[in-house]
Image 1: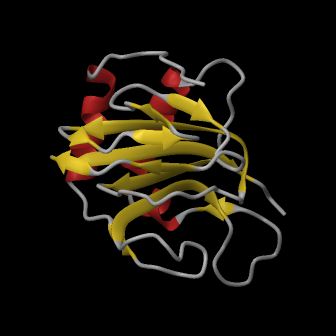
Image 2: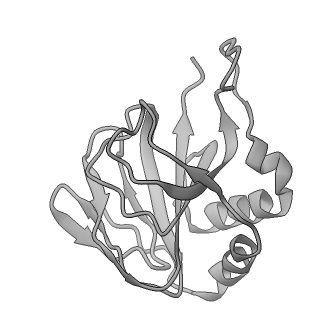
Length: 167
């Protein structure tokens, strides 16, 4: 399902500048994402604590470290999300060409939009290709396999709005 709520690049310009001004943490292969390459990314909003998880979500370290980015991501999410779409977490990936995967810990639909000065790296969901540059796409990432085509050039930030279940 494609949702083309807004296609105005100007609403994304500020978040692109903010993201370009920070160095996102290097993410390496781990048991949750064995096929993923090393990439740079951040998680904003609510997360499960890495240590001593007591069943309660908490605000991510990235949200605390860069509140201006978190605030801007939430602002954009509230503008582009259709009525009734809820999210409590936001994943940001820089130039990630993700392999085929599902997001088993997500609940309900996810909304993905990409920003930057890039070419290529389209989103593929169940074999159908979507250009997400300044165009949000909503899909159930926990049920539908998805991945990216190769990045041709430039800098791309994928912004994924989703809900993390508190269990």
